[in-house]
Amino acid sequence: MKLIKYTTVGGILLMLASFIWMGSSSDSPQPCFLVVSDVHLNEQQHMYSAYNGSGDAGYDLWGAAKDKIASILKDRKPSFILLLGDLPMHHALPADSDMAKSEISSVINSLKFIASEHNIPLIYAPGNNDIPGHHNGVFSASHFRAYTDTDNPDQWAMAFGNVQYPANGRLSDLGYYSVWPLADHKLRVIVLNTVTYLSKTNDTSQFIWLRSQLRNAQGLGEKVLITMHVPPGSSYDGKASWRKADVCLQEVFIRSIEPYRRSIVGILTSHTHKEGIKVYQDSQGKPMDIGLSIPGIAPGHGNYPAMELVSYDSSFKLEDVFTFYHTYSADSVTDQTNITKWGDQSISFIRDIVHRPSGTSLSDLIISSAPDSVIAWQRRTETILNEAGPKRYDSPKVVSVTDGCE
Ligand SMILES: [Zn+2]
Image 1 (cartoon, rainbow, N blue to C red):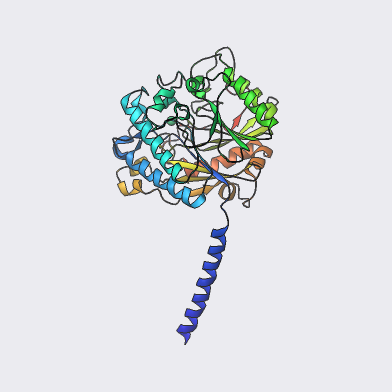
Image 2: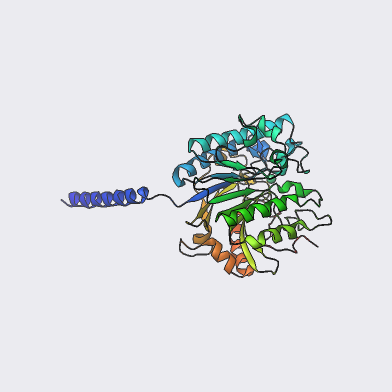
């Protein structure tokens, strides 16, 4: 009797649980997009050999990352994927070598396949390791054209979506473009080629194009997400990433986006391989925009391999960042089972770091908080995410006009 009663109660609980589960599963997931960067695939080696000095991703780690991406797409249904560059292993340079081409092809085509299965766009920003000549910033579409299985040479990494060309029509050579990943065209993603600023240059033509894009987007009432590989601001070595010739490119960038701050929902960068929340300040030193530094899949900068899911509200304001990380470390490199399974570890910036209820806007919080608070929150994520190796690299938390202009 007692047993029957227990079973009945258990059954009711089970029914209740499945009812709640059915209820929540019928709700559409929170709108979001997925960002992946710095894969640095060494497709010839498993992690044990690939790690080396530069911490590239072996085929086993990349396999685990692809499984994780597929499961995130299935469970969280992001609207699009951003791939922020640096696809081949470091030592495959120059990037027009056969090995680099093969690795670029492998990463792009497998992500295109996963994205197309979910019928969502894949948007790519060029990284310094993807570009022939490495640092000279001259993007080569032909380089991508030959290896991305596309009939449309202007679409290189694009799986879907409308691509708008820069006014001078030299998109293919320049590696920057705008794209609207959502059907209603209310969100414009501007992809910049900031690899070009690793060499000293006074060429500000990309910012002239950027301003015209922002002006146009504002006129149309669109929101804008700005993405790039090499971030502005001082880099992990304390020096400016964008090298200064006569013109301070960073100041030109800040002054270019400043008038359009209300249209810009966020600035996404990678290159450092480190996770980071940043504040972009206007030329008066006031918080203006939120920036996210996207961690690498490759673990070599003292980071855990990681990718980020960014949620947004109905006006595209960024709500939260979920970092999905693999607890791979250089110490466990001989343990293959540890590498091939990505695991369920994740951090919500709002829930786990700043301890606010979900639904709090990450953008509002970061822009309205003192830089010291942002830095303190960021330190908490670093103790979780960046403990895999020596903490050699760190990214700046506040990006201002003067940072990198000295
Ligand atoms: Zn990289």
